[in-house]
Length: 469
Image (tube, one colour):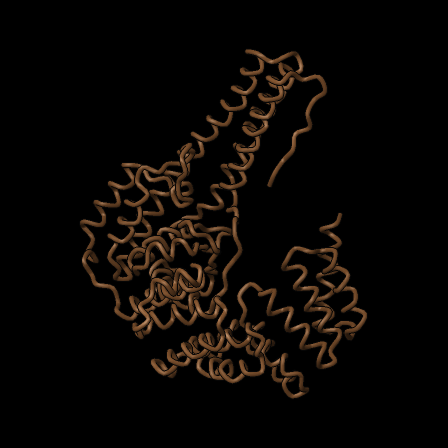
């Protein structure tokens, strides 16, 4: 987010420069407070049924070891080449694609996940929010005083007074930074120790956590040099690393080999992410044309799909299905290639097979529904509606794309009130309350008064009115 500070009439060049510096100082402090209070998303979320299933394989044993119900925690992936992981909202764990690619080993990824579960069980997010609220007033007051002092000096021609004003704002920042760092380091150490306990209970070698933090050693918050986001949000002190080393060295799980099945899925996840994230030409150039191994074929299929060369990509997907004929995710990949190539009718068959093999996977159900809607027949529309309703019922936290297709299916089958309701819910999900209110009012006018769907629409009307007040 960019901010523009209006230029005062008559300010000297030196004064204007100091004003800009003061404004940047204030913006940095405000951004810092916001970032530590809640994570910033520089890129969009990534949804992929196979990758999410792999993350569940990694995280579920750790959650059970922590006494946390796996279904109570949402794991989300966001597309960022830099490694990072964090918790937000108390029950949401977010990992970046960069983290998944930089650490394609189960023990390392589980070390990071166990640490984040330690934040959840420790209630750190709530405690941090309290600390932020306590610090927000003094920090912003100091920064605003700094801007005022710099502005006054700038109007007078600049000089030492303006520099002192900038220093006042920067000093407030520094004091807050020190307080936040002290609080953050205590949390990080507590999460480390809890995480190692969960790793040991799950039979996972904790040296994976140690090795991840070794990579970020020396990268501290507020460094003027570029550092990875994980180091910014998880400062690695010498004391913290020493404590982890001691626990890892004494751990009864030290040296335990990872589950070969888990190794397979993590390596497969890395292959798929490489195919989707790196440029197709780069992926294809790395591959030996004669390499017909499973993971090489997976990389090639995805890269050819993105090239785009759909016929060649489908041929590679068929080879994957020959290797693992009962794998729902390879049928899903073939369906995706066909659907995104404008061949939705052809995509129905592989998606149906994928759903038969993974009947409770909402993302696959959603894509089957989308493919069926492209057929254009009443029977296909009814089948699409059934698939999309099942997917929506199983979707954790809502999927805007699935809800859009579900509204389309309701409209196709003559259920205009339900279509308006689902559209209103989608508008709420993507933070468009005005449109949500309008569609909810339309839904109420079309649905039977007092019915469950009418009541859901009325809830949205009430909520959006409150948001606009």
